[in-house]
Length: 268
Image 1: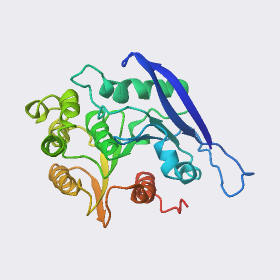
Image 2: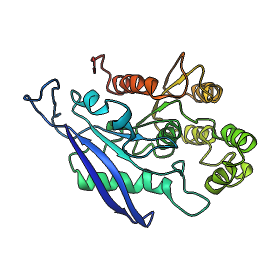
Image 3: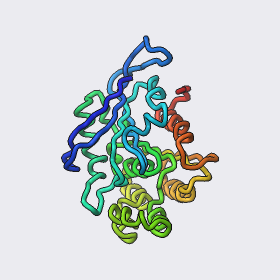
């Protein structure tokens, strides 16, 4: 594999930003790891971080490069700060950046990345799980599948809980989403966004989700899973014992890759 650290300018955000990119490379001389390069265009996973993290976190907390080395896919890990993958009320257009500008930039920089929706996955944890499903539901013409690990999928309830339990987060959430009334039913509300896309009678993205039964986001996940199932989405969801930490996400991102690619390959 090749790992690239990319600094580039975003016209949408009006500032320089960062992403780390893993590209497939065919190798046979590396000790302890085999590298595969797929024929033709690369399938691409956009791998999103959570609230406390940045574009480096998946490399620092998991073995993501090793897991994808035998799959011949590309991985894009952008930084999106604390904006919840949203065009925020305070004026920063992170949704437009992640859903439109970034895929275009990646395909310009790396022309071997496929531009087909069926070859493009959004995946992430916590805030990034919310962002991943939002990309699948709100930009399905680009992202044909979306996977959430411990995702904040019932964002309205999370907004209410954070406002009630942690007054320090209230200005943050209000700056991003506006008021609770602004959020409910908007395109930032995952449940409403799923209804909106289903009503258009277009091809629906494949969805995946995992959440631990001891996670503070567990109840919201159950609500979101039930909601999209009733709307007719192809959802693979699972729950196991676990809370909100990396030892689970390191394991479950491997399940995500196998689900997306339709393989039972051992990625260890």
